[in-house]
Length: 378
Image (cartoon, rainbow, N blue to C red; front, side):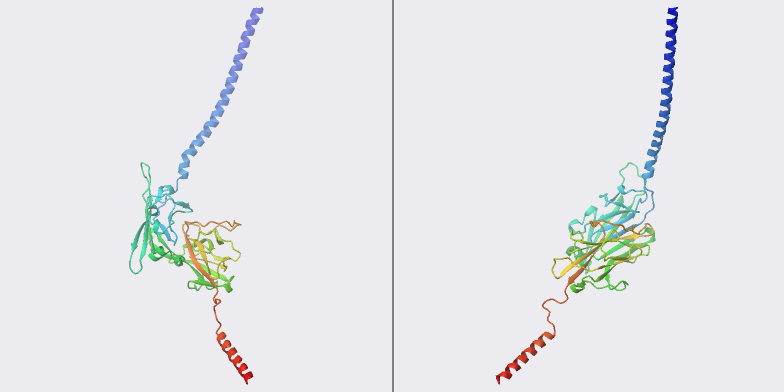
């Protein structure tokens, strides 16, 4: 009886252990199945994301027989619409050598920052000297597509552009002409357009009459209002002149650390600055109160620099973002398009000036003195 009980108990225990093991195994299988389903679903979703991401990141191709070139005194800036015929910024190069394009909203921007004779060949830039009565230098370059992959599915692009400068300006660095730039727009079959972008001083807030250079401010008129207008002539109303930054220096160099900022990020930073219009038309205007830099000689010079761009209103939103409180720290973009203007601050009458009545009064005093002495000599 005891043996039978022991056998029954042993068999019953084995059944219990087997049932417990089966239950445990079933629980683990169910849990694993649920885990696998969740993980597999998530992995499948991630796989879908990985499949879709390259399509999301790729730019939307557009037919772009369009290039806008700004020939500034200090730089040449070429803009082409972004993703031309499907080419991304890293697949386009300047002169087939420099992949230095910058992706700005709606455009790819390529810059030739140095036009001095020592740097004529920057990123494959070619120059040609044209002699004659008005000798000139013509700079050529191009923005070309380059794909190192085995197969190419995009139409090749080659945007060739040029800028012409007076030879005297480049050789002598004649800063007096730095207030003028030239803008070219090549719109494929729609034609080409040329504009002169210039910065001038106007007589008053109506901006009807520009003053002749050089611009002289008498020391007695320090603090008077100066009216500045920057205008692009020859372009349709779709192109807007945008003033980004304006600052003044005591030297012709826009990168001079000693400077006074007037406009920063299209917002007035000097409390005398009033921006009348900006990025609304082919002309932008503002005014500020004249000043001079301290601890300089009586005859001094103030150089006004403005970073300007021409914006295509049909392709981009040209209006600057609303003004907020900004830091006074400001570094001008050395590759930006900058116009420069010279103001001479000096006294109209120097210390050697002699009033016209001076000699007459002196002779009158001598005559009266002689008469006085002659009277007592009698």
